[in-house]
Image (cartoon, rainbow, N blue to C red; front, side, top):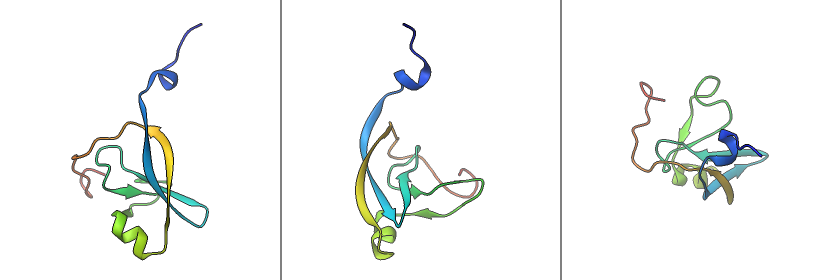
Length: 78
C-alpha cells in the first residue's frame, strides 16, 4: 500500500470559528490569524480570535494540517 502526501501530512487539532455555516480556520503561516473560504483569491478578510468573537462566531475544533505560529500575514504576503 502506498501513501500519498495527503495521508502523511502532519495534523493537529486547532480552534476554529463558525459564523453560520462558514468555518474560519487559522492561517497556515500564523495560527493567530483566522481566514475564511476563498482566502486570499476570492476573500482577503483576516480576523483575530477577538474579532470573530465580537462578530458572534462560535468556537469549535477541527483536525487540520499543522500551522506555524509566527509567520507574517499581510496584503503583500497573504
